[in-house]
Length: 239
Image (tube, rainbow, N blue to C red; front, side, top):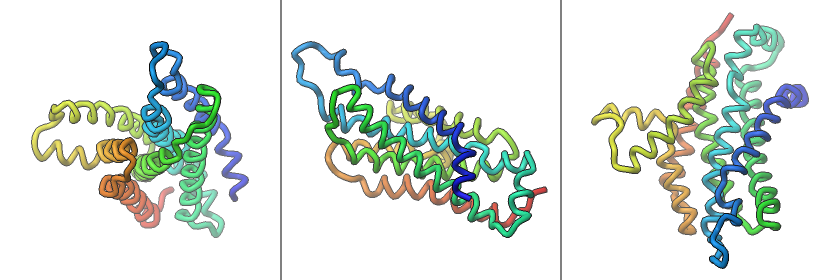
C-alpha cells in the first residue's frame, strides 16, 4: 500500500519542493550579504530564527499533501473502490496522514541543512527548529484532516484561507487590536490554528528553552481535530 500512496503523492511532493524554494527566497536569515559590511552576523536570528520559517513551511506542506485527501476520494468514487476490499478507512487515511507528516518534517530538515549550506557555505545548527515544525505540522494537519472529512469539496482552499488569515489575526492580536469583540473573539481564536501558541514556542526557542504549556496547546489542538476526523470517518458512510 505504501508504494502506491508514494506514487500518488509525487506531484504534491514536487509542489512541496517548490514551496521550499519560495521560503528560501523569503527567509531573511539566508541573505546575510544584505547586512551592513563589518557588522556582526546575528546568529541568534540566523539559525535559530529559521525555526519560524521551518514551522510555516511544515504547516504549508501538510496542507499541500493532505488537501482533499478524503473529500477527493469521495468525489471521484475512489472511497467505495478502496474500501470494497478489507481495508479500514481509519488505517488507510491514518497512514496517508502519517506519511504527509513524515515528508513535511523531512522537507523542513532538508530546508534547514541545505538552505544553510547554500546561503552560508556550511551548516551552523538549528535542529531545535524541527520541534516547532513538528508542532505546526500536527496542528495544521489535524485541521485539514477534519476539514477534508466534513466538506465535500473546497477543504484545501478553506485550509489555505485559514492558514493565511491566521497570520493576519496574529499580527492584529500582537499589536493590541481585538479583531472581534468579547467572547466571539475568544471562540474564533480557539478554533483557528494555534499561531499564538506556536509564536510562544518560537520565542522560547530564541531564549534557549521549551515553552511546554504552549507546546501542549499547539500539539493538543492538532490531535483534537485529528481525533474528531477519525471519529467522523468511522461513524459515517459515504456513497
